[in-house]
Length: 319
Image (cartoon, rainbow, N blue to C red):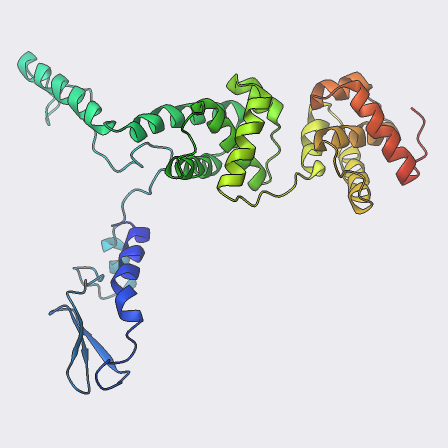
């Protein structure tokens, strides 16, 4: 049994006894659990406070730590990226018996029918069909974006919450999946823009933004504001700039945030302007077009943000 489920079962078992810290008959706080009879008994008056309790302890004994580790068992962890959370059996495609020999054609036909009905039964409801489509799309987008396994699991869990809250009805599955990925990236501080997700998913940026705002509002997500400094390492790496340029750009952004210069402005545009200024100040100049292509913004945006930063921060840089 996995440790997580064992802890959940222990919690459920004790839920009704926690509120009974004392005997309801005599008020005695000294209660004894008798796992052989499955009872919680008062040591003073003998009242059975609770019955049919479960024994969470293992059925084996261990006399030292090494023996305990050898006998301890645990199942596979729950995978939210799997429609059935990974808690289902599968009929393999090898068509071989336990010895590795090929089975007869008659048995193969029987197994084929079993696989077919097993697959149909595993996605019988509309929710299961929705999850099968959505999670495969989520995995595809996450693979293109290079997102880690932990973030995919978080996005899958958030999508399941959307289904439970009935937020999918009347909306494209792909748009909600893209919105969930964008929200998860922001929650975990991973810089991924709507333009990147739109390009990979094939859904319009406006549609993803609309779905994201709806999900955030309905699930009451506390999504932090995007820090422009998160985009700096990505931009400097794409432009092949040094670490000094990266440090300078982040320092400029910290000053800009302190003075409230980024309020109401796109974080990618501000980050791109900071990289543009830092590259010139460190003698590794890049053109506005080069920076704009990497950041996914226009040259006009970079010029506007550059002028604002130069004026408000009192920068002396000739471009």
